[in-house]
Length: 428
Image 1 (cartoon, rainbow, N blue to C red):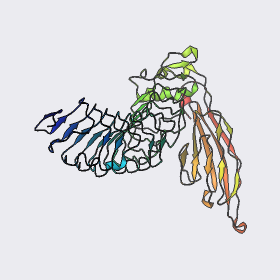
Image 2: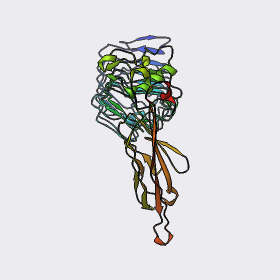
Image 3: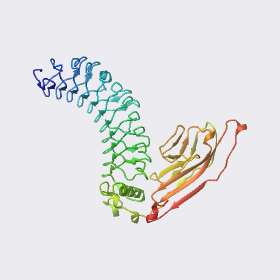
Image 4: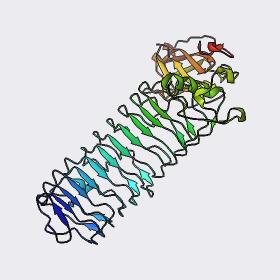
């Protein structure tokens, strides 16, 4: 046992905390499974420092002054499963030093002055299950491929990193818990959580979120808990949570909710999803007559609501194959839901997309390049708590060879189903 350390369990547990060590001590027993070097003054971890500790499972190097980790620093640690490096002075992710850590499950890098997460930053440790990158306050850039290779990751902490956008998390196909609290996200857009089919818990508290766009959470089919508390939300798009069939707990408190017709769907959803505790979640901030009232206690008697209006309906469009095309469907408010029915009956929601076709934030159906098979009638359906409005138009695609062209024509039809008050408001 090193002279300044304490050892137990036949030297399998070595504790060297608060000993003013400026380097890793020699003579650590090769039987060591747990090594705690926290709260010292170590600045550099040199190559092969731990190479004789083949049984080591947990290595704690947090709260030192580590600014450099040499390539090969963790050589000889085939059984290491937990590596703690939080509260140090690292400016880069020591990616190359992670080579051969084939059993590493947990990596803690929180509260380091790391400035970038480059492509494939963690691809040498695909076994990782937990990755803590919280409080990287100087983080300025995250590569689109930063998380490539982390196919086994279950927990990711990116809280308090000053993020203004949600990075590309698509490679994290097994991620179950995601911490994004304490950032500066502002807007949550569709596609932000693409690929996260296993996510069960999502935390977005204190992230200055003021807008959540239509269908932003549609990819999270297995989400069970969502925390949106302590943000700047006034309202949420109609039926935002409807695709989340596993959602059981949603935290909406400490937001400046405006209680009008746009919030009525949320009141219904709360009553159906958490009927025993509709007062759990959020209070109205405005109008004055409803201030302080729980959203879950609202009903149709508090409002006079009208079906949505399509201010710019789609119009028939003649294009040549290979061209880009747009069918408009702009509504008076972003709080409605927008769906498109394609000629073959496929339903496309805002934020959903296929290879060439997507629904934009304003409801527009966008084609990057049309084919002859795209020809047919498209119907836009806009929905709110009081009813729905539809508008249809035909996209006519002509062959690039004029001799093979043909055309279709139809008139645009707009239908409105509307109720003003009472239980019929749901019948549309």
